[in-house]
Every structure is written in structure tokens, then in C-alpha cells.
Length: 115
Image: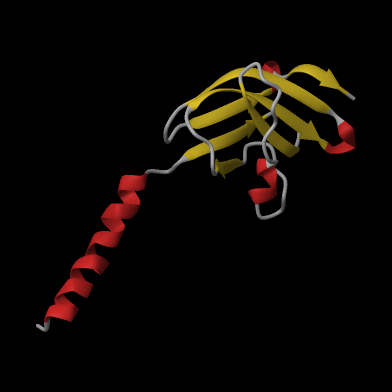
């Protein structure tokens, strides 16, 4: 086998291992009874809201019992602003986001809701 082909074969055979090593990432699981139209994070207590993560979903919303991979989010403690159709917004305080974990939000977690 030629050296270039050997190197290529080694690289291609290691791709599944590298993908596995990266893990599944941080995921949001919508356990609320409504479809989320917005999900923004802020470092806990700072009210410095980041981008709307639901825009990364194929239909730009997160249905009940749907999961979404959160990109660009580092592990830590966050507050979340959750938005719904009709301008309703709620806050979820002090979410503990961990590496490769699923972060779930249920109706009981929603606080400070506006209509």
C-alpha cells in the first residue's frame, strides 16, 4: 500500500472514534406542555441573554417532548428565558448545565411568566 493511501485509511478509520469521543453534546428537552418558540441562556443572575437556540431547530421551534442540541454553550449555571407563541415568556432560574447532559424544562420549572 502506498504511504498516502495508508495515511488516508488511518484517518478515515479513526473518524467514528473521534465522533464518539466528542459525545452527544448538551441537549435541551422540552417537557413543557407547549411548543417553545424561544430559548435563551444567561449566566445565572446576570440577565445577559444569548441567542435564541430554537432557531437551530429545523422548524425553528421546539415541540413538547422534542430535544435540541445546544451549540456554543459551555457547562455552568444558567438562567433561561423561555418564549411561547403569543408573546408569553417565562424564566427558569439556576439551571445546572453539564457536559453531554440533557437539560429538561417542565411546566413546574417556569417562573416569572408574562402573557
